[in-house]
Length: 322
Image 1 (cartoon, helix red, strand yellow):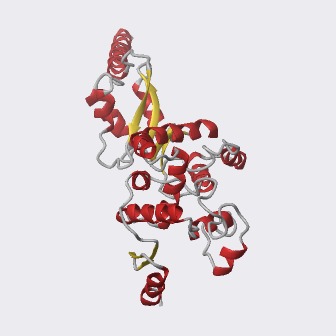
Image 2 (image 1 turned 180 degrees about the vertical axis):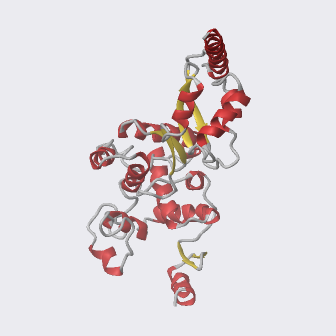
């Protein structure tokens, strides 16, 4: 019996020592400050244990690597952001990293209208229909923030933030992006809101950056001559909806019957505000338009053809579109 007692004591001692050793290896590093641990979108070669060690979130990289590989079992941590801090032990960190991220990557492409961005955010952030309605009504009564300032880029958004907070993140980034162009707009004696409206027209007219300064010049030439802009994208904006499409094909009759202050076939000058959310290239094109006498343009096979007179434009239509 004594031998059994000694064996039990020895076993308990070894087990206790092992447990203490394990705790030492996987214990929290002690820094309780919260941080966002970011896993990039292209995460195939991303070394989770090495990055955790670099950020001081684990004590022993090699020990954590073994535990991580044993626990994750060949899968990878999903791209996104995870709220971690130095008070979390290794097991808790792994539990967080194998759950859904606290922040998710959202790529917003150029030229979307606000409602389209809201639907994208619903898909990525898990918003309810009520939250989408809140997003669409955010700044709805403000000419400056109704459209055009939800800057297209790739974002890492918290899933638990309200639509208003997400909107403000967009606007902060927009303000940072447009700031370098404000002196150019001021030199041209135009408000930034006017510049963004023109940039939104350019963004919807082409996705070829090389064409954007030319289209900017055409818009200015038409405004200077008192000509109506006659841009199909403005009619699309007036007609667009979720059921029929946000950017429907415009027929000739639509340009004559769509009663809207955004229909530039029926109104003089610019529409009352942006029709989409432009990117950097379009904002820059407004700041630095080309020098050209071109008054008309059309696209054929992704190539733009300009004309100084309506007669030349008609010839281009016959040559390139029929």
